[in-house]
Length: 298
Image 1 (tube, one colour):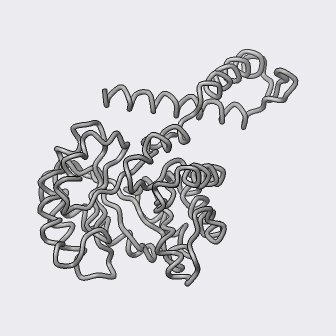
Image 2: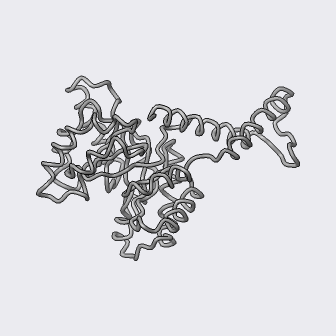
Image 3: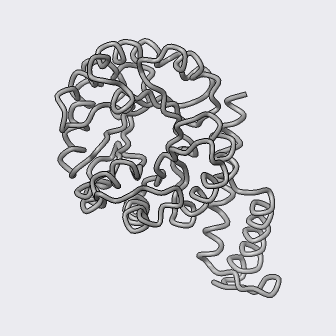
């Protein structure tokens, strides 16, 4: 079953009023207020306050609204959650997730706050950032640690820093870890979301990097500049040709295969079997979900 459409998650510093004001018109599938790396220690309290006050406003353009809190390895996590887990919040992103216990601890805290504030149980979703060597090694256990989880990000910047390797635009040095995150997310039924691309003025490398991630199974990514959103939406959406072909495959297999008790049929000189049929159905489902999201935004 298709998860939420999460082609783009635009990160906005939680203490920047100019960027916050633009959140409803960003066009991103998700707007994420960042009160972690984008906010210096002396501004954490201000970022919490501004973020909490902006949750419902940011959703006015049709985006879901998440908050990236500070991780459990810091002194700020509980204060972050106490400030932002309120009606209007769609999800929390946990950075530098180290193990399954980090996820379970966050799940418990969110559950307690939902109860305290009369929010529907399970209404706040969770996403994890896997961006350290330990996080990568524990990827599957992390991705299966909570029913609230809907997505897992690969974090290239911190991963490369942790591994003491140079980060490049085309990301050959990240391939193994990047693949592990995508596989772990998919095996857990989550959406795999790719790392931010820091060289935002280099659209050629951004596009190639995104396509490489798509080949690994990524269906969206973290966005650090609004100019990246239209390109990402195009690349993470099925083309009209792909949708037309998927509909043809679905119709043909249902009429010439399933209706006649056959598990594989020949179409246009190629073989269509159950995996091909399932893939076609998923393409159509994703296209329709994207169309519905765009219609809601308009």
